[in-house]
Length: 140
Length: 318
Image 1 (cartoon, rainbow over the protein chains, first blue to last red):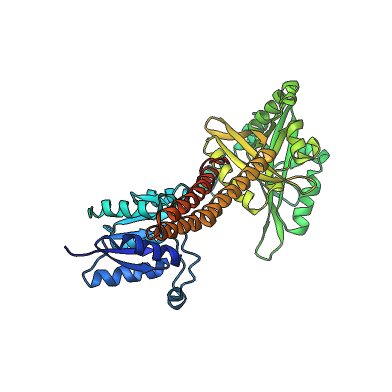
Image 2: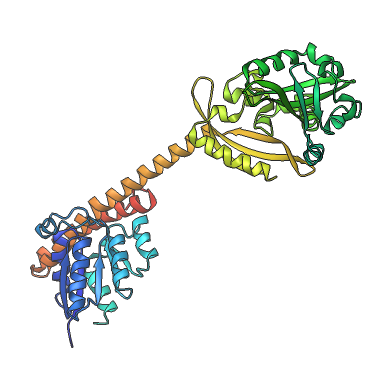
């Protein structure tokens, strides 16, 4: 079975590392974006190559990225809601889920309002998150 | 005067008359008969001296006004009332100098509009307001009656108190005198509505005598007679304190929202990362060390619960 493609959008390096560790047992290929601009760029590139992401894991606060890639890109700093809106304009069928510290706050609600059905809080842990991803991609 | 012009002028509601330097009436239209309540006929007035027909005009200083128009060559607009055969007649008069080919002023054209009816309604309203002043003054809301030119013809104590002026000072003034450009735009829009016979409720910032800004919630209704706009009556509620309280609440809520956001960001992320790595480490640990790490994870879980309750419920407990 072909590997499912996941694009993780988060400004924290450790979150990317842990998601990769915990999803390693699933049949997935993971791409990392550290801010909204980079996420849109990678999504478009993958789609053009016929490898559109099956799932986009979106954080909300993307302002604190210290990753070198972000500095190089110098993209406009946009949050998870705006990034999702832009992605949906490019691809209305983009499959976005939220994984964020703000799931229970107004910001998380805004993500739901623009059509993101699943917004998970960080408290579900990475094991819990891996289970949700597995369910959503029908990998279990 | 050409016949057709005379017919047109005779059909106007306004009195139009023409006098020469000797104040001889060269022409007057039929409206003079209505203005004089039928006591002066057009034909009788034509050819006579104006002051001979209306002797009281001299007492009122109208002769000086005509002298000024003849000598200065500038139009003059006045608003006046006249005791005429026992009744008060209110008029707005414009005197226009007419020059001959050589530029000399030989005649003055006068146009008079009778606005007695409007004035009477205004006066009746003011009298009614004054008659019921005990009630009007009892209410805490500012009550104001504006004429069709947005001039205040009646205000109660509460209204004067809002603006911190004496009631007498406010009579003849307009709300336009107590607002900034933004307020002026609102008032222009509202005046338009009133002229269309529409009531409305709106907010307005006004400047008081000592330069303070007060927020008013104004409910205004127009009064019409035969479809014509006469006055507007407004109830003005000073909502300054309410607005300030609302603003304080808004600031506090915004502060609370920010604190919650920051707490979520600074606690949930590091906690999730810490637990994530702890579980990874646990996989390769011997049983006794695994138990110790589980206890550490439990402790972090407790912190996470406290933070979640603080962020979602504003309560501090596990």
